[in-house]
Length: 242
Length: 79
Image 1 (cartoon, rainbow over the protein chains, first blue to last red):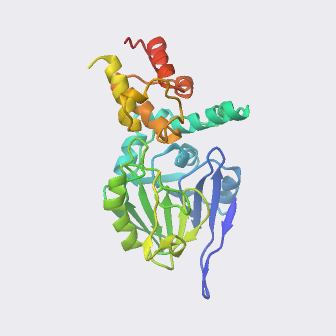
Image 2: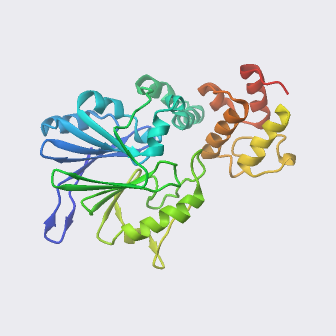
Image 3: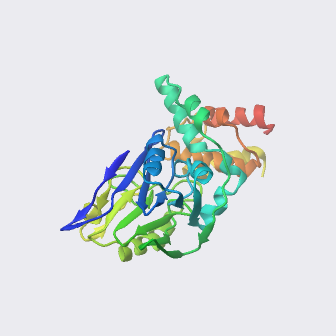
């Protein structure tokens, strides 16, 4: 588990923790305050469990950047062990509540192909631990949702393109959880079922231009945190598609 | 539309190719048939034929011809 301690000048923020989901290296983030935690894109992690126990966390708000399985794999575990509230965009919720959601196709395909090439048994290992579930979100929104939580502010904004139910999640106007909709040096995938590149260009990019400021820390679904200046080229947010 | 026409249409639409490119087409044989394109292909085949493919079949679907066989033997799609 990584512990990020961000500072701006003399100002020091509470730490944000990251746990990486091994099969496809996707990020879960945890932010703790007064015995409660915000968890973004949950995966199961012994270290995360220990961290939450050490901090006497009894209640968690779970935000989902989108519906893909590598960003929701641990959702049931947190629901079972904590007083939880799951918040996501309406389409994300609909997808997770469908029968098709019981099949993490892409994860299995990637691991199966890796096994064929490398003679490994990653798919078998994955199938031992992955728990297929359908989920019901507790709170959904169409375009955006603002929440006040223990002197913190959460803002969730629908940003379609990578998936139909993708969201940008902003904590305290400082930290931006981008999911797979804005990554550093990694193209945005807009060819999945449910992906629409024109939605990204016409809806999401204007939102990113409006919402993201120079002093914000961007915490992506894969890879390390960065700042918006890292991906500005000739005055514009530089996004490539795959 | 016959099942063969449906099958071909799914491949052509998913990978933005022509019917002339279908024979002998293999996974990663065209730029759009990568891991992402594969998921789109599977979803489109499932929609077109109203089936749900098993994981083993999804992984084994490694060529245009292999896909036909899988659909025939495991999902009773006749051409």
